[in-house]
Structures are given as C-alpha cells and as structure tokens.
Image 1 (cartoon, rainbow, N blue to C red):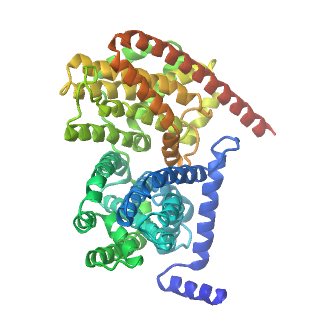
Image 2 (image 1 turned 135 degrees about the horizontal axis):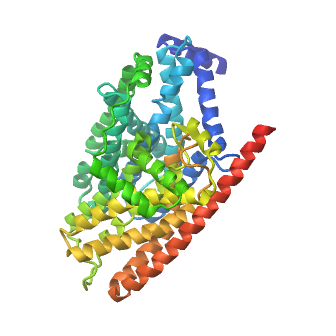
Image 3 (image 1 turned 60 degrees about the vertical axis):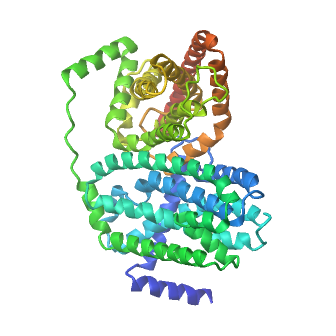
Length: 558
C-alpha cells in the first residue's frame, strides 16, 4: 500500500514538472544544513535549537492565554482569537525569515549550473518554508485546541476540528507573505527590495499589534451582544473565515459560516496555486537577477555631518580599538540593509501604543496627579528593550561574515574596548535619536519638560537593560559569523521570557512618576548601575570572545 502511494505521488510530481529524486535529496539536505547551522554558529557551544526553543515558548504562551479564555469565550470567539494570534505570528515569522528560506541568491551559485528544474527547486524551498510554518503553527495551536474541548459550549471533537483548520489558516497567512514578496521582486531589485521590506515590516508590526489590541478590547462587547450580529462583523476578517470553518465542523451549519468558510478555503487554494505559478516557472531567473543586481550608489555625507560625526567620535571614544569598533558598527547600522531589516520592525510598536492612547483618550501627563495612570506612556518605553534584544541577537551575524578574519589578524590590545565601542555606537545611533523623537512627539500632548523627562527616563532604563542583555552575549566579534535561520524568531521568544523584567521596569517607572521628587536621585543611581553593568558586560564579552578565538586557533593548528 505504501509503495503504491509513493508511486502515485512520484507520478503526480513528474506530471507538474518536479523531479521526485532531486526533490527528496535537496529537501533533506536543506533541513540538515538548517539544524547543523544552529549548532555551528554558536562557536562550539552546545545550545538548544532556536526552532525548539521558539516552539516551546510559543506553546507555553498559548497555554497561558488559553487558560484565561477557554471558560469565558464561546466557541466562535475562542477560535477567532487564537486563529488571529497564530496567523499574525506565522506571518511575522515568514516575513522575518523569508529571505533565508525562499529568497536565497547564494544557492544559485551552487545549484544554478546543475540540471535542476525551476519547479523542483522552488518546490524544495516551499516545502522547507512549510515545514517551519507547520511546526510553529502546531506549537501555537496545540494547547488552545486541547483546552477548547473543555469549554462550556464546545464538544469533545473540538481539537480534531480546530487543529487542522488552524494549520490551513497558518498556510494561508504564509502564502499571503510569499505572494507579497513575489510581487515586490518583479518591480524592484534585491537591494531595493530590502529597503522596501524595512518599511513593510514596520507597518506590519504596527497593524499586527494595533489590530490585536483593538480585537481584545472588542471581545467583551461582542460576547455581550447578539451572536449573529457580532459574529457577522468578525467573519469579514480572514481569521473569521477559518473560525466559521471550525463551526461548520462542529455541526453549526449557519449560512454565514458556510459562505465565509467556503470563501476562506477558496482563497487558500487560489493563493497556493498563484504562489506556485508566479515563482515556479521563472524562479531560476529571479535568483539570477537577485545575484546580478547592481548595488546602488551611496549618498555621500555632507561635510557638516562628517565633522559632527568626527567630533562625536573624539568626545565619546578614546582608544583606537574603541574608535574603530564605534565607526564600524555605526556604518553597519546605517548601510547594512539586512541588519536594518531585522532591527527596525520593533519601531511599529510605539506608534501603535501612541495611536491607541489617542483613540482611548489616555494620553494624560503621568507627572500630574491623576486617578488614572496612563499606561500608554509606560509601554512606549518598551521599544528600547525590544531593539536591544534584537541587536544583541544580530550582533555576531552578517552576510559578509567571510571578512571576519580581519578581527583575528588585527593587533587588538584590549577586546574590552572593542565591545565598549560597539555598545556606544548602538546607544548613539539608535537609542538616543529614538528617545529624542519620542520626547518631541509627546510634547504635543504634555508639557515639553515632562515629555523630554519621560524620554530621558526611558533612555536611562534602556541603557540599564542594554547592560543586562549584553551580559548574556555568547561572544564573537561583531558581524563575523554566518547568519542562522530562526535568529529573529528566537528573539521573539526571548522577549516573552523577558516579560518579568519588563514588569519590573514598569513598576519602577510607576513609583518614580508617583513621587517626582525622587526622579533626580533615581536617575543618578540608575545611570551608575547601568554603567557598572555595561562595563561588566564588556569584560565578559571580551573574555568569551578571547576564549573562542584561542579555541579556533588551536583547532586550525591541529
């Protein structure tokens, strides 16, 4: 029986232009390389796979959410909320990891001259993507599906209906992003494509967080209202299509459920078919064009800007090692598109908080006595720690990692100064402009003194958090290692794990704003504590990097 099914699958694959033998071996090699790279990039340290850690944390987070909601929401709203959550998370993961999964110009140099059909190659890349989508989608939905069977309105068949529907919804979400990328690649070259993606990810993070917050605020009103009226509004959104499909599987054959569920299944089929047609026939051409795309000319910096930058370097950095690292990291933050693509999407979150505060009329001044403390002011400061987590994870990796040998042959006397220059470059290039801009925006709602005082407190807390984050840096010269898949996704899991620390920072801000007289003394204490933590982090990173360098040299000698 199994051999007959295998033969049937091979015939179907050959009929659509896919070589089964090549497909199987390329897919196996791609997955093996992904998992080997997870351990290889850690420079010999034994660490858990980023994929396994991501699935574990996502599963725990979904379990916590399900425990709070499975007894309070009806079946439709429960399914809608978790389908929306899983679709948004999968779309963000595909958005951040797509370049390493589907768009891989490096593969063309290895496989382009071999007799591999375009459809076979794309089928391998698409299967690689779907593997991660299905694994992460399963982690996001396994506990909500199981707990849904014990809600007041669901029956015991709920997990068997919900789980496959959730995987189809995740596939729909992934294919939307794939087609978006395909459409962009047809009109812009690869370098421009990365610039466009930076803005797309910022907008996506804004709408993802903003939409989910609006949905959470709407849930009580929808639960209290008439089921047909509230559900009819939610059925318009894609998660509502698949929530309607769950209802049909449970035997609730309402007309609205049937129409929108059928529409969701139809759109999923059309998206998968369009993805295969748009990429398969011309995928080799796309890879060749990505590889041969010419780099755009760099805009020269104005003389005044160059003088300000040099003056800033002389004031902030003293030694030659620190100055070199400061200049290098600042240039990477300004020019490296891949780094910006992974780092800047977190900027959508403070914009979402600001819009939510305006809509809810909760943009009150936290320094003034009030019964209602504006939580939006606290959450806007969260962008600093989120950027720090991303920077700490991305610091060792670069597409130009082959040039990392320069660090090993350069006469560096003190590695501590190198990491001090790295840290100062991030503070001056990213965090300082961010909080100055935040103070300027909040000046529209508060007095300028209070707005910039809030921004200064946020900068000081981010400086403190930077020292804490860099204490967990695993070592390695900046931008000298090969990029690993799931790196940015792993940072999302670390952000979830950092929630207690975020809560401690919020509590500290709340106490300080309720007692403004403590602000000056607290700022001095926090600055001194941050300075000590950052110095300790520099020494630890230098010590670990030196140990890794010695191990590498001994290995090469042997």
